Image 1: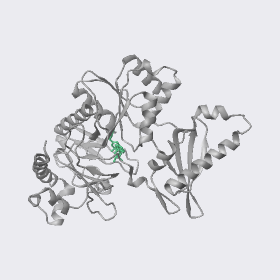
Image 2 (image 1 turned 30 degrees about the vertical axis):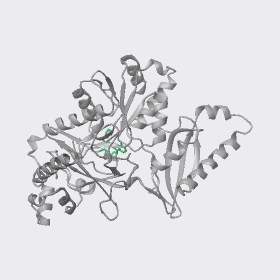
Image 3 (image 1 turned 60 degrees about the horizontal axis):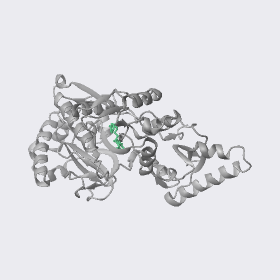
Image 4 (image 1 turned 45 degrees about the vertical axis):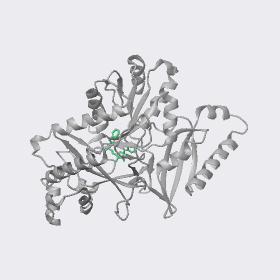
Length: 429
Ligand code: DLL
């Protein structure tokens, strides 16, 4: 689709969306207080005059303030992970579910999944949209789905080996966990038929992608989504380029803003992703601030797809840590740690408050083979201390961060089955 065709479709769908949204209690009263009528939206640019919707506003309108259809038209409800307070709910009409499955099928196709494939789905099933979202999309594509869900890792490995899945879907941290468990089971990679991984739902880095690809012998593809918008399948990397995630712009209208000023940023500049849904019926959203940091590009992609791409989400704005005046995101620390050869990709960031100052300590596991080659040698403690100092220096040099570094024994840091929890905040006691 050309840009002009796409924009005309977007405008038509935006007008329908605004009309639909005006029927919800939340947007209805907002339109009234702003003196706006759905007819005010005459161009895509006119959306710029509309205020943002924040996650706090969604939480405050819990449970169904943004519902724009009669309750009996709702056929399913999911919820955001709710790691920060009350969850927000995501209601769907039957059309919404059809659109969702279609977009996940389209995403999987772009990631190289085919009808003949076996898809092992290790995203959690339930209120979280990962499991069920990937499930119905893969089925619509005609693939065979193994609804493994998250957890029981030993059984996952048996199923992967016996059923010969070519595609693994999970969070990146769980994929790594599965990779380590496969290694520990001492089964050679040649026993498995895995070739593609569809990983998302949490921030991850390029070095993490390389580690996962090496451990599992696959190509890893980044998939983005959010329950309030739909679930997984809002954007995905194409297998051909894996250079930014194509946003399905016939269903979502993306903007990137400066999180402080709220001004819309030009393509290529990193800021907060803001999304407007274009086809959602049950709970349409206008200019939702996602809290995710990314940049947009409308440059053409070598795969031939014309829809814009977003760069890999660098971080959630809410996850920013401020240590002694330095602002840092967990993924930036991950980027450094995973490039140190002696370290395993398992880490935890612990934030404490000492005499009114925030202190960060970085706990990271040392690779098992390194640990065993140093254990009980004369230089063990010197080597450990030198490595801690080297990591501390790298964090200082690259991020300006002063942090304590603690090397943790192999397998001592808890493994994730869903979204990894990297930060332990002990500041409130
Ligand atoms: O995580 C939906 C999903 C499921 C996406 C499976 C991909 C795969 P929520 O639980 O509502 O929905 O969390 C949404 O997760 O705002 C981002 O902060 C983060 N997130 C999702 N995908 C990515 C990604 C699902 N590829 C929140 N990279 C979003 C980085 C991601 N962060």
